[in-house]
Image (cartoon, rainbow, N blue to C red; front, side, top):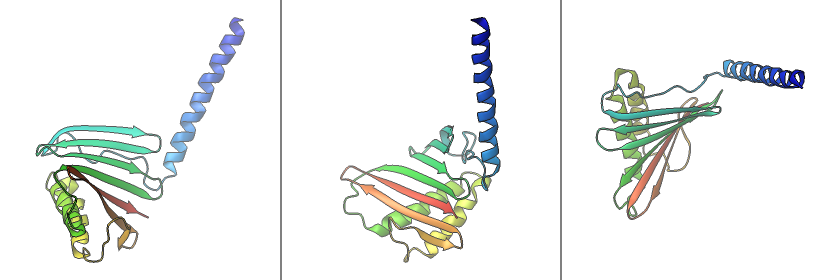
Length: 169
C-alpha cells in the first residue's frame, strides 16, 4: 500500500514538473513574453495598485489620486492586446462620440505624466489625436503598421465606461 501511494505521489510530482516546463517553454516562444505590470504603487499619482497574472494574460487595477479607477487586461503571445477600462460617474447618455476619443487622448496623456517609463502613452495619445477624425467607436483603427487602437463606450444616465484597446499585431 505504501509503495502504491509513493508511486502516485511520484507521478503527481513528475506531472507538475512537466507541466511547468511546458508552460515556461510556451512563454519563451511568445514574441512578447508574459505580461508584466504597467504601473506600480511607487509611481506618481498612484494611490493603490494590484497586478494579477494568469496563465493567459493579466489584470491590473490602479486607483489614482484623483479618485479614478482603471482596470487593465493584457493578453496575447505573438499579438499583444492591452485593454484599459475607466468608469466615470455622470450622465453620458447624450455625449457625442468624439468626446470619448478626446477622453482617450486625455487619459493617455495623464498616464504619460505619471512616470518617465510611461512616456509611450504620450505617443499613443498623439497618434490618436492626429487621426481622431478617422477613428470610429467600436472599430479597430490602424494608427501605424501593426499598431491598432479601438475605443468604445458603455453609457447610461448615471455613469459611463470608456474602453481603450491597444494592440500590436
